Amino acid sequence: MTKKIVKRIGIIAAAILLLLLAGFLYRTFFRPTYAGNGNILGILVFGLLTGIVIAWLLFQLWNMRKTQSGTVTVSHTVVEGIKRVFKIVVAEGQLNEIYNYENTKKLLKFIPSTKKALVIVRAQVLIGYDINKCVWEIDEEHKEIRLQDFPKPEILSVDCDFNYYYFEDDLFNVIGRKDLQQIQTLAKEQVRKAALQSGLMKIAADQMKLLLEEVTAANQWAIKNIGLIDDYKVLPEPEEEKKESSEKELPLLKQLNLFDKAFDKFDKAVRFFKS
Image (cartoon, rainbow, N blue to C red; front, top):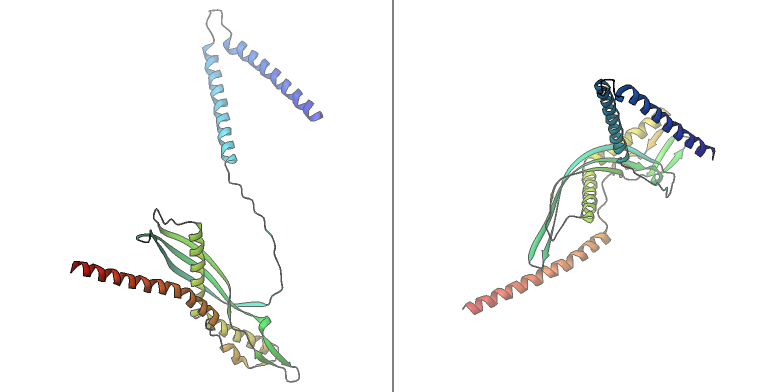
């Protein structure tokens, strides 16, 4: 309540001061002289001051518009789960990939409509080991660690940066949000495959062997069966996934075979009528 009263008193005082200032300016600059003419110098000075005030107000309004037009972002982070892990990163790779995406649809099963995209992917791949999967036996008497089972190196993280350099679509086949998501998913999967087939796995195995040997030697221990780490080759694709992929390809092959048969029959009929 007191704030409102103080605010009103301030407004009234400011209005009184403005009236007094207006009277002073009139008396000093605009009051006619004995010759019957106004004070020209006073009018010029008052116009100059008025122009400065107006320019300052416009400048303040321009700054207010800039601050008000700023982008406001709101984010909400939800922690779904936290667990303890024991994973060691022993190799890092920088991969650059040029990914060409092309999708063709046929309007009325006759008119082709194609959309294309050219993406350059810059990826950072981290290779390491999950030590929780390691099985060993400790012989304290002889100060030996015998490895019984050692996991294969795996991709711990893939961080990709996508740069879209080229887009081409058609009226009936437009590139949308789903296409961009599919491009990113396929490109990331291609990066994973390239990382598995590169020399990163061997580098990771060599680094892990060196790490274990140095740690055990520093504590005057010995490690046995370290040759298990040399088995770093990637396992082949599971048979179930191969079956699913082959089952998906069968309907497409059947459609192609039926299309070829229909085309042959149509060609024979045309030749028959021509003869």
